[in-house]
Every structure is written in structure tokens, then in C-alpha cells.
Image (cartoon, rainbow over all chains, first blue to last red; front, top):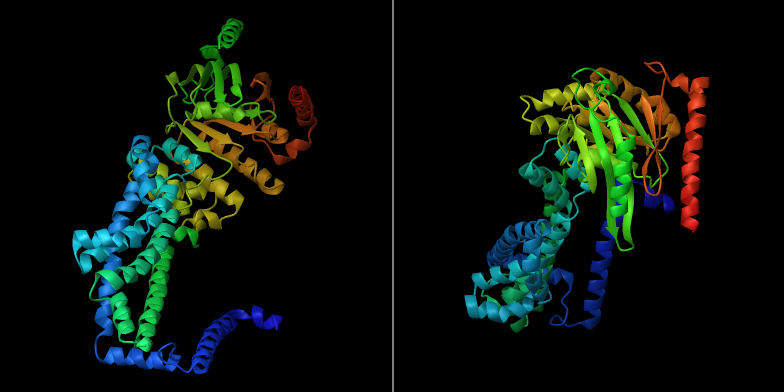
Length: 257
Length: 288
């Protein structure tokens, strides 16, 4: 048994698949026990529902709408949060100026912004961009801010003794020093953004996976609700993995030699 | 503060070494370091801590100087002052008669830890200085210096994938790649094992004789100080300052077998006693 655990990739996959199979088995057993497809349909019904939605062409537009909102909000949040955090980390006056506001806004959950987002932006894409951006902003900001403080004095001294001026110090020392934390922030921020888009679409949109789940709940199509949930789970995991690849090869390659 | 100023002015009168041309080595050579009445105090929660007190130091161009002393004697403080990292509370510090104000390309620095930029490949680390100073082909310069420390094969590697000794060799190559008149080293071999350390000392001496920068080398290893230096400055503790200047009259090039010789043993014994006195003093003071 112990040998089985320690032996190579094949066994790693075996364990992974066993986990997935176990999960599906328990799900199937419970749904048979309940015997009510409205409360809990079995996995095959969900797979059938998935293909039905693919065939009638409604699933992909919903996925597309949600993706667009997540990536849009995430991009807006990153473009504001990273420079702002580094600026605050490096400049004392700006830190003192902005930190009370940030401290006050941070505990407000993205959901609490939905009513005001609808008032300001109506229904559809704009409030969803706003909500996903708010959700992604704080994880990115807080990690980048910590990153801005994580430069080692030895590196600064060495760089200056090698002739680096202020611009080179920022681009070649501060920024790469902060990059591991920034990329952690981006990964968490993307996850938060993805969770927030569903919430936003439940209330403030007429398209997207969140809206699709809500519509099918009202129609008592529990199988299709589960299709929506599974797609959200799979896409979220896939996006997180993609970002990890980006992190390894582009953002912080030196951390993965 | 007034007591400090008074003490400093007194020591100023007793030392007449300032700007005496006969004191300096190679005529016209760069990298001459002069410190006068240097003092350093830090404001801490427990009041004013005097790390260094009225210290006069004069280092000739091209000299290899070792700063030796028990921990807390301010040897790193002095080194950081020469590097321009710390500003002395009082006193004047000049390199070639120019006051030191901030870290600058005139002084290469090698630290014990975190010497290299982990986000740059080995070759980019070494090329950093030449690049910043506008060299035409920084990579070519970097290759030359990597070759000098025998690491040309590792130019594409990330620093973290190298052993400690290799990282320090890259650090030395990087510091030398701008041809600085002064090379400052803060316990550069302190984290290495004894074998690697001995090889590194030998290599450092070879590089030094090739480029002949003024070297200020901080260490707490007596053998290392004697083996490397033209002059060992033993520092005193609490507050820090100079205790004794020990010129090391050993022929160069120096061979590692030298450490077993009688002359070496003599220096070792003498310096050991000086440091022991200081260490004991700091123990007694702590107990009070």
C-alpha cells in the first residue's frame, strides 16, 4: 500500500480519479435514496442537461457573458489596484492620504454594492463589471501593497552601488520584488471576481450563468441549475490554472526554476 | 552629545594621520578612504545607543583591510558608512577626498545574504552594473567577469539554483564588473562551509591582485582576516571604535598552507587576545 502511494505519476492520477469517482458515487447514491429529481437529480441527468443546453445554443452565450464580465472587472481592478498599491507603499504622503478610505471601504462585501450598482448603472453589463471589479480590487490591492513593502534593503543598496537611478530602482528592483505578492493577489482576485459575477447576475442581469441558474430555479429545472453550478466550478478552476501557468512562465519564473 | 563631541575633538588632536601623502599607496591610485571623528548613534526605545565613537580611519588606495571584532562592535556600521548606506552622526568620511553621500558606483558591495537579485539570471545580475553605467555591451562585460570566477557555464541559471559559494562568486563578479575603486565585503563567506570558504579566499586574493581595488572586508574569523589582509583592524565594543591596528607582514601571493606557519600563529595569538579582552568586556557590561 505504501509503495502504491509513493510510486510516480500514474499513482497520483489514480488517487485523483478515485477522489472524483468517489464524489460521483456518493452523489448518485444520495439522489437514488432521495428519489426526487427536483431536489437532487443524479449526475447522468446533469450531463444530459449539459448536452441539451449545448445543442439548443443557450449555454455558450451565457458562459461568454459571464466570462466577459469577470475578465473586464478583473482587468479594471488590476489596472487600478496594482499601481495604487505600489504608489501607497512607496510614498508616505499618499499612504496617509488614502489609507483611511481604503480601510473603511474594505470590509464592505461586494454583494452590498449591488443595490447602488443597479441605481447607478441599471441592469446588464455595467453593474456586473462594477461588482466584479470591486470583488477583485481588495485582494489585489492588499497583496500588492504588501509586495511593495517586501523589497530587501540589500537589493536596494546593491542596485544603487551599481549605478541604478530612481527609474531603474523601481522597474528592476521594486517591481520584481513585489511581483510574487502581486501575482498571488491576482490569483485570489480572479477567484473573488468569478464568485461575484454569479451573485451580480442573480440580481442585476438578464444573461450569464448566474441568471441562467436563477431562471432554471424558478422553472424547477434542478438538473439545469446543477449544470450551471458545475460549469461555474469547472471554468473557475480552469481560469485559476491558466493564471498559474502565466505566473510560472511570465510573472515570477524565477520562483519555479 | 556634548560628551561625544568633546571626546572626538580630543582624539583629533592625538592623531596626525590626516592627508599625509606618505601614508598612501600607489601614487595617483583611486579608492583612498579617509574617515575623521566618525560617530554613529541610533535613537531607540531604550534611549540613545552609541554604535561607534570618534573613530579615525585611513585606508590606502589598493589596500586590503580586514575589520575584525566581536559582534556588536560596529564593524558593519562602519562598512555601511563607507558604502553610503548609513550617514555618520558626526564626522567626515571621504573617498578620494569626495564626501560619501549615498551608495554609488565607486563602491562595490558584497553582502553575506541576499547578495543577488533572484529575478535576474546569473548573467543579468553581473550585467546590471555595466548596463546601468551605459556600457556598450553589458552582456559581453558580464561574460568576461563570470569567466573570471569560473561560472560562464551557469550564465542562464537562476541565482537560487546555485550553491552558496557559487552565488557569492557571482556576487563578487557583479561587484567587480563596474571596476569600482573600492570593494566592500560584509562577511561575504560567513555562510559557507570551511572548505568552500578557503577556496573562495584564495580566489578573492587572485581577483584582488588583478584589479587591485581597495578592499574593506568585515569578518569575525581571525584566520580569514590574517590570511587576506594587509592590515587587520581590531575593533572594540560598547561603544564601537578602533582598538588596534595590526599590519600583517606576510608575503604575497599567499598560499593556503600559510595558516600553519609560525608567523601566522603569532598573529593569530596576538589578535585572539585582543578580541578576547573586548568580548569579556562586553560580557561584564551586559551583566551590570
